[in-house]
Amino acid sequence: MPNLSARLRSRPRLAVWIGATVAVAALLLVIPSVDGAALARGAAAAGRAPGAVVAVLTVYAGAFVLRAWAWRRVLPRLPFGHALAGISVALGGNHVLPFRLGEALRVTSVVRRAGVPVADATASTLTLRAADIAAVVLLAVVTGPAVVADLTGGWGWALLPVALVGVAVGLRWMRRLGRGAELRLPGAAVFAATLLAWVLEAVVVHQAAAWVGVPLTPVEAVLVTAVTIAAQTFAIAPGGFGTYEAAGTAALVALGVDAGTGLAVALTAHGLKTLFALVAGGIAVFVPGPGLAGRLRVAADRPRRPAAVVPAAAPVLLFMPAFDEEACIVDVVRRVPSEVAGRRVEFVVIDDGSRDTTAARARAEGAEVIELGTNQGLGAAVRRGLAEGVRRGAAAVVFCDADGEYAPEELDRMVAPILAGEADYVIGSRFAGDIERMLPHRRFGNLVLTAIVRFVARLPVTDGQSGYRALSAAAAADAEVIHDFNYAQVLTLDLVAKGYRYAEVPISYRFRETGRSFVRLGRYLRAVVPAVWREVNDRGERLVGSAAG
Image (cartoon, rainbow, N blue to C red; front, top):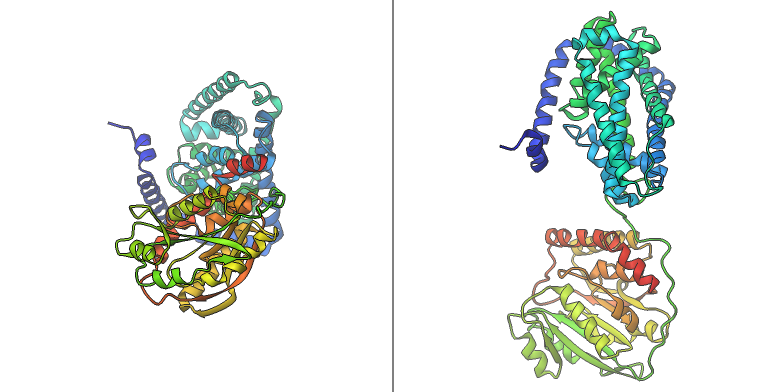
């Protein structure tokens, strides 16, 4: 039968439910026990001294700066900002997640954001976190041996060898990894910084006690801090709620403080720490970049590509992805021009597994048809059309929807910037041109999604979802559409990140008069949003490689 920790790893919802249940139970136990007047007195005193609150939290932040410095001492390749962010994200995660599951975010953060090897991040984290536990136990024993013995019955010492074993395992792991200057074993300075960090944290308890009206010496504040932190090693509820209060109250009672008042001190201190953890952790998710959730925008320093040479005799290829468009395909095919800018227009319908007579009707009107067989999706149809344009050596590869919403007659304005050597990728903007009819909810959705594309791409995009686009020969050959459902956002991000020159031209638009659009908001967002994230993040190495080539 698997143990509890294995179950929690395989069933995160179980962990959350257990943690939430324990937190609620602790809350129900805490409320009747706290001295309400003392708690109110502490809150009022803190409210009257915002400067003191800022000062205390600044000192508290200094503890994490020291830990980030220590981490970087043993892992030199880790930038200080990412070290501090990883520690802060873990702190915030521990105040949201049960069983101190936020600790895993520390390693995850630096691996994903700073490119640190998993083994290096894990070994250094294990060593430093074990040293943290050893430090608080030593501080507790040194500052209040009698209190520790009274609270734990002598079992408090048992945590120290466990922590020291953790330090030993971490040191051995780090030594085995070696890697020259990649990892350095912690020296006296690192352990001194670890001790000092916990002393700085004691300022929060010291000031909370003062606000409530309990005079604590600095040494007593260090003792209470050490006891509460040591107790939270095995905390279940998010933020160690309940465990922190129980341990802090017990330590204060052992120092002669009334239980209800001691609980008020513990709640005040814990409240300040929680506030800091959530704010610092929330900021650290995004800063420094890339954020823990990944990059939100394409890189600002994109490669510069030389202007492409447009072959003099090369044709222009126009292709139209089509799925069940028998009602309008004939009219659209008839409107395709035979030439633009003195170049022959080659026209192809990419039939995406239509269940009706779309392919037959297009052929009957003289169009060349490429049938995909089964319905694969608009993105797959666009990929096939771009490949066809590259195979034919087209000077420009253009595509638009086959539903009659876009005007094939405007092909000349779509290819003009490319044939003039002024752009590599052109979008026909409906919002810069003439919209005959667009449903209000679709207009709103288009504007919102366009604003997102504009932000992510760092370009003045006015129509991120336009179905009328043109690519130069080089852009068509290099373009990648990473999912079958759609192409709109990912194609733009792909080409912009690779340094291809972007342009827009105004076009006319009218809402389709027959058939149904494949776009359904929920399905669309579920497919597109993850694809946009992958385009900006997972494809980073590919984009760098493409630019170098």
